[in-house]
Image (tube, rainbow, N blue to C red; front, side):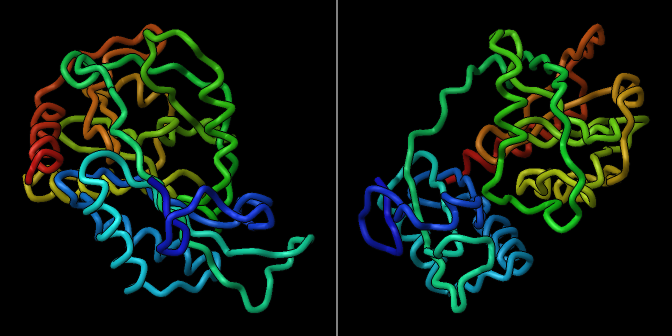
Length: 271
């Protein structure tokens, strides 16, 4: 199931700048019983990305289209892609531009239940994230760093990979955000230089605040990660996965991780 600008389609035009330059943004949205979960957070992040890239969209039209698409999809994943539209050769953005809206439907990935129940091991990726504050936080279409990082391992013993920036700071997983717990405080990486501000990351921080759990966004060193009491990953499709291993370090699945996992699981299953 796929739509282009509200109509059934097979793909984007070959001259679209999203294809040529990665000139656009995307959101990957879990759909349950015809509803787009965390829709407000997804659309808020998309709006911020469009503002930064100077892509003008009709927010009301986009929302209505997404809601209708998800109603028809019923269950699974809706991928929403917004590009600057068709352009000729050269980097200069077309004036005026006519943004394109692409919606793709797919089944929910079949993640093994053990990832959530027993936890996962992290692969220490050697690929580093470049530091670019202009793009930090938004979910733009150029994900080559993640492609290179994910190609580093094939061993199914690793469910995710750890990504650091060029200075060695801990940032995120390949397709997840990462949290650690130290002395009862929930910590996650500052995303002022690079990384994706995940919608589930935002939801976890909001739920933690409701539980009176202190939350801090700051730089995290690799050594500090290894000394953490608890570590977990989050993503808008699977919720929360406890992290039980990285290199030689082994963690138990901690009580605060379980508490937040339970809160998020209720959100993802709520009908």
